[in-house]
Image (cartoon, rainbow, N blue to C red; front, side):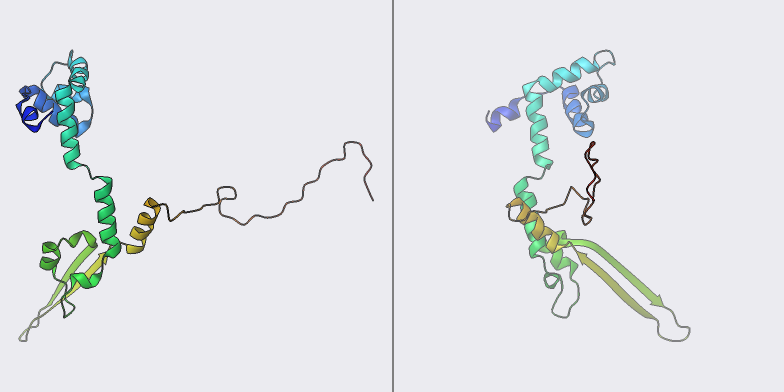
Length: 182
């Protein structure tokens, strides 16, 4: 179906509301009720709406708009792996948020904390100090994740001994009536 044909599909106001509500709760009956269908018919109409191709297409299109693809997730992970604090500071070592925003580097920042302390002196000059704490996402973890995607990193875990060292155990097995050797 072409884009022009998709745009020509006209949905009723209730169907449009149904789609909006369904994408919030992923419950067809609840979405039908919120769209204004009666309690008696909400379950049946919710099911019917989900089986209509034009409604399915609209829902799938809206989901595609908001969901992150695996390629996009891998790109973001590789950006984090390549992240460098030097990209976020100027030549004087000062953090430049405007530069980071303009260059799409804020996605590297896990934590940003700024604290301003003002000391007031009676009859003297007031002073103000600023502290800035920036934590980037873990580049090593991002590298590990990328290597896992490419099958180059295997995290092996011992599931037989719960990670504890194995201890040799001696078992006594009865001789079932045979003589005990001395």
